[in-house]
Amino acid sequence: MPTYEYVCEACGHDFDVFQSMKDDKLKQCPKCKAMKLKRKIGGGAGIIFHGKGFYCTDFKNPAPTPSK
Image (cartoon, rainbow, N blue to C red; front, side, top):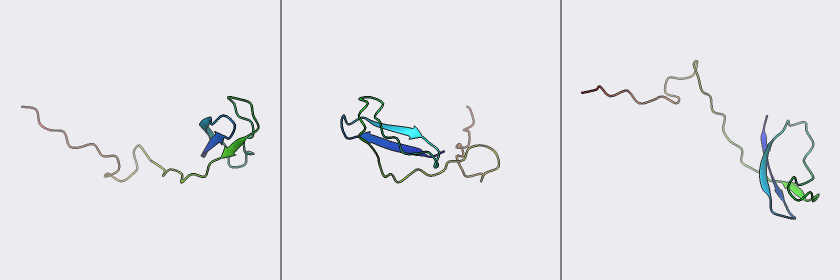
């Protein structure tokens, strides 16, 4: 699910919400209860894959150094 950023124009409360793309935009501020929320336009974040099955250079730890 995408993360959307919201800001309240009444109190300035700034927060992120995980929402489905099908969900309606939030309208009421959870902090001051004003109906002044605006969804920010963000650049988004890249997808990060962890775990087996990806290229060996992805998130590769440096080679262990031999102990003396």
